Length: 121
View 1 (cartoon, helix red, strand yellow):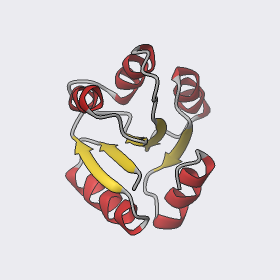
View 2 (cartoon, helix red, strand yellow):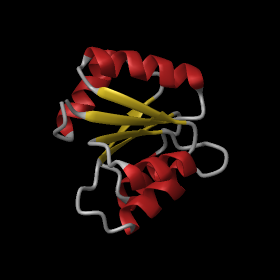
View 3 (tube, rainbow, N blue to C red):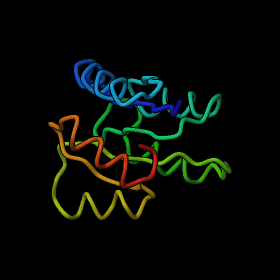
View 4 (spheres, helix red, strand yellow):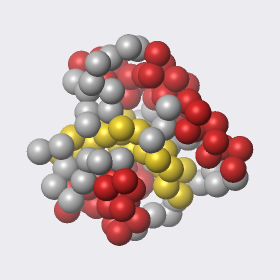
């Protein structure tokens, strides 16, 4: 079973994403910010990270840069999941190492397609 770490400061978003991912047969873990997510990844690397951009403590971009600099052999796929939809944000996320980008709000079908595109669904 593939694992997905949902990183979002919104409990509602985490709950919705968890429900969708569980119907897609993912084992789901959650983190409320980038710092929590980094600590989780240092213990157990997930197959994919669903990552919010704007969070307290450590933003999605800060987390992504640190994760990619970590030199881990088993890097997870990272799908940014955010309300930031301008090309500059999308380009910055991809340049920092994101594999895909999905806009909030999202539905099961949209998320499933993005996960297929990165090769985990």
